[in-house]
Image (cartoon, rainbow, N blue to C red; front, side, top):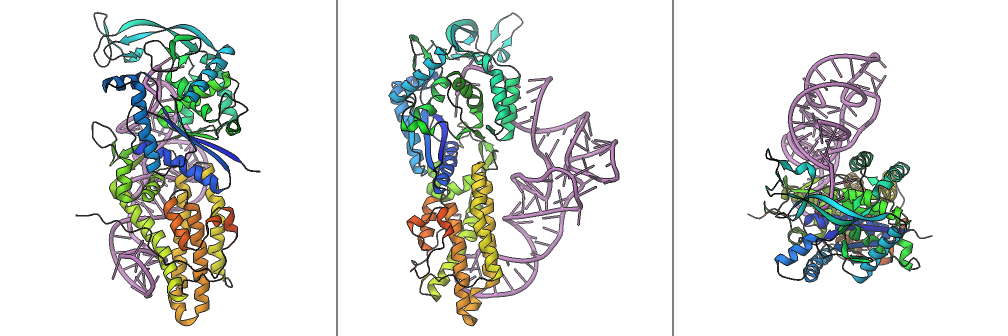
Length: 510
RNA sequence: GGCGGCGUAGCUCAGUGGUAGAGCAGGGGAAUCAUAAUCCCUUGGUCGGCGGUUCAAAUCCGUCCGCCGCUACCA
């Protein structure tokens, strides 16, 4: 039976251009999605843009264009970025699409019908100059009794009519859900934060606004638009065909994992499951929060001018090299730093020296000594068996890591095999066997081809284009590149193409 | 303030009770098939400080110091 696997990227807010962080989260999801396809699973991989809200309305206004036009433009940039990063999303949901508005309204109606929404008023300190509500603890109270925002702007008490979601009613159910599903939130740090946050006590959530217009109208009350997060989170349901529960797409709900940045984990781990509970819909199996990228040790920010453009990096270092670096450098769920030095080191040491050179030294000996004809498997020595056994074990090890979203740990284990293969070739020294025992030389090279095939197969999700080329050079046909196919060695006698280096060393100019 | 995390070799980090680990960087050697790539050996750490529990602590407890995260409607 084919297993269905549904994965989502965060919904990108169209208030700014995509940068390396957006590329990173997209690539991480892409690697996981591709890996599941490689395992033969039926994958739905969804991405999209979150396009409503006051900020978007204001940014559009500032540029003198209608909000829709502004959203169209930025959303297109995100899709462009994903094309450039070779992201294989099956669907891309924009929250301004008709199907999404339908889905979000249906969710609202369902939640309301079940009695979890009521009309009241949102009251708080509002700064007209900042055009925002200011939290109680951010307010400075002056000796004369006046109050100001952190910006120094005066604030006033205002009441705005608003629909509220009875989040309070879900506190216990959420805690029970976390307890019964210990893997729901990952990794452990954010999980503890969310749980203690919920334990501190929840308040009902204001889920509509009347102060601006750029949003989805609340069903039955056109004066209100939905709070952006109610709208945005519903995009995951939109991709599954909601509210049409008879749609073929609906079989892909619930999602297996929502990958999100750590800054939006609360919305995904508290509000989202509560909304779904309120609508009697199945909950996602997992929310995984990843960390942030710093650049040369500094926080990425517009004011520092160090915001990294993924396209520029892939142009300079190569797309697959960039994908590899981003996946390799990130500790499981933690923050990471992008530096030119570590990018170049990993490219040269791990890609060029360890992997690229291993393939090249193996294949060039096949080409030179056996006219590029892939040898049959020969009698296996103990050392042959040892390394082949290590290779045969690798797919399940890597699958386990991917299942746990430990994308970089999977690479670490793949590299253990690559290093073992370099040690093997040195010990066997086929260039010496060439003079003494050419049949044994063929056996050794054949073992290496099989080991490299395993490596290349498992690396396809990370570096799809380059691994395609490597598998071409290894004589592996298109239908022999799945994980399942690794069980069957490729037949000997195939003519291999002339080997070419796939990972050139990067030499810094100047 | 409250809750939580982190502090281990020059660098990035793994390691939750039993003689300190990996990769990179540094040093020595071997080999020469290969993208001068590879392989082997090796230098290097009072595991943030102090105190406690234990036959035994990086690992448990207390305390102090230093960083960091969360603390609701801001994507």
